[in-house]
Length: 485
Ligand code: 2AM
Image: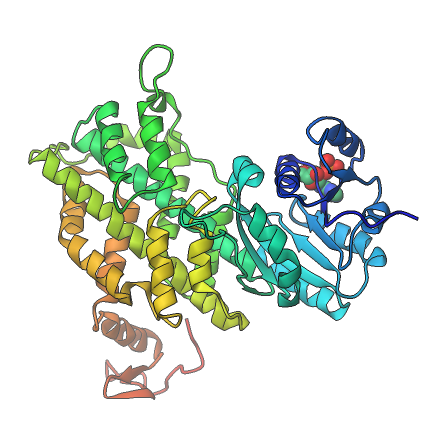
């Protein structure tokens, strides 16, 4: 009889899977590896895993037989039907209380469905976001597990051991919430990553075009910023990229074709925000900015015929403007995270999840692409008030945006005058100004809707009651209360 020797089984020996196994092995867990193409199991055991405690299996049955109870099987396979296929294959060999973890890039509705289906069968499902790429997987990823909470106590020792650690030593892995919450939070993480990257790119374009800085000068600014409140992985790598010279001594970055690729998770976040009616405008703009960038040929034609301002250079004090730029970047980033947390809050309401907001900030604190010192402040905000309605209401962030707002306005206004696009920096400011207006012009909008479509409106003095006005004196008093455009 096969002995149950392994603490966890892992299916899927692509780079992420292999690196996670090696990471688990480093942390003294015995892992059993399996892959659809079983020759990869042998190759892995003879090469990367040689001399380790890692064992292999050549069938799903053998894999399950080698696992200690409750069995824990982690899938790192292509998102979609491959996950469902493996779940089907695993089921005959599992018992009640066993755990299936999907660590792939699954879309959260699939995780919600899988969690519910498996719960009916007595199997505990966990959908976990895994972030940090190959390097993260090998030496410490950010892990965002959600699903059936009964599984947590069993996988916690493994997950928290292999995860990244924040500078204070706290593991960047905690329980996120129910059903699809892990993959949902991972999706929002990716959207925020789009936003952070776009903000940095806008700042770079302003420095380059508006201020005429050299690449080394720009790198120096990012280096400086990385010592303060903007301290983050993306600022750090931007500094290094800007300093990087090609073999001819010129900055490599300028030779790279300016068309952005995308795998779709930013788009998912944008679509989801529209579905939920939450204004996650910065991520939306970041996705659209990538779309616009990819229309290179059309932009090339437009660049020759569409005119812009005559003076596209900043004529004031550069040092002062750079300081304002840093403040604008920081404030816009705060808005982006506030929007991301607004979205997660709404999703939690929609699905009945109890989201661990402070934990989410901590999980992103290390290991992943958006890791930054700033996330420590978000964790503090949610630790102080787990029911915080909006991140911008936290005293720290309220003060931070308040302090930065005039610099932020100056940057956006100057960029507009110079004709330099700042979709993310300016949408963040527009959102900020929209949010802080008790009165928006939607009163007029409601009047228009009632005028042309008899959609009715409510009075400020009597909310909840539909009113219709016969604006023209023609067409009678029939309202279209059932029609909601
Ligand atoms: P493979 O090595 O047999 O192709 C990343 O592609 C990982 O997902 C690989 O381990 C790959 O297995 C696995 N994978 C991709 N599509 C799959 C499918 N339809 N069924 C099972 N495994 C799949």
